[in-house]
Image 1 (cartoon, rainbow, N blue to C red):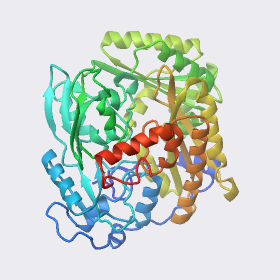
Image 2: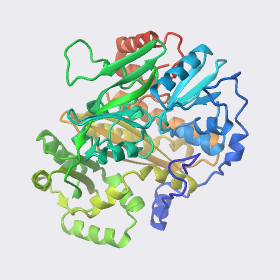
Image 3: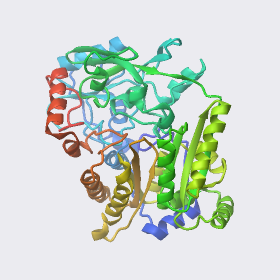
Length: 531
């Protein structure tokens, strides 16, 4: 059963080892756990619905509770404290496009605000219910999870927008295909959610970001239906798919998605390579990308993340000790950085790509350690979010930021983010453990993904204030350096204040004008994307 106040299946526990606890104590101090509210206590805070009567929207308190929050840090605080309001007044669970259209029409008739709900995995506040006098409803697409059409000649598959990642791949795999979009939220996030937040998967280097996979779809808006895409290419004016991608529920409900698919590869392996320094690893990655070596993934951890992963995640003390002896002998001591290389395709493709990638790595003093680390990474590739549960229960808070920037600015921005994070709570006498990796690479530049771990303050209000200070200081640094405020999570509420700096005055005016055109009454997910 899915956790109601955290991430994942409640039977799945990613326990911290004794070594991991010692590592955290040494770097940020002893954790201070905060008592969590029970589900019963949280249910008691759900108020009576403001809906008078509706056959399309359930006012059940448990259903409203379960759709109240996502996975942002403020959401986390709300769930753990049991103070999850404000709540939507009702939840619709359509199973078809026509039922979703009817739910949206009913919401318009009663003057309600609509918050679309997919997998509930947003980490930037997309699901937050606004305060106000208007009733609020969720339209949850979780039952719109079927494969609707498969065009094997054109390699296109159409799904209900609420189909979660594992179901997408299971349905395609049965016919020998895959989509290849694997964000860390893959277990629960949905195809439609990926589109409206412009998601990236872990192997975007091979399969592309969601905009490369999104062939078309159906957007139901308060003004009517918009059908986008459907052709392999077109020069007939602006590409209206762009009105859907990144729209974050502001323009309407995305009910169906047509995606570009591929045949299942013959082989897939992940290899570990260690570099003596970050700079050498970064240059190796850039060389591989700009030479177009046909890999499926490049994931470079900086020296702090490398040390942290080996301490928190690896869990194989003896194997890691032997690995470190070998690396020291090969010239990789303190400051080492770990690169994961994915090779995917036919046997011949994998052989050639692996050989060339390792040749480039060796030129930059990279030490190939085989598939041992790669297998460990692949086994745990979707388990990172579970670690947040264990950290919280041990008295530690964790959050992330992500951005993207051109190659010359990658290292300066990464260092500035970590410096800002490390000092964000200094006035309170608290340390922040910050570490970074890059995992989405382009000829022009790459993403930067930083994680922060710090001690819980012992109260929910103080924990929120610590997060607010940390998030604000790090986001300001990203903007100052010219990075995007989000490479893959979207804007939501948390990033909305920083969007004008990226889009500019005319860009923001265009986004607002599109929202007014699709949604003249302002009923679609207000406060998200822009204020």
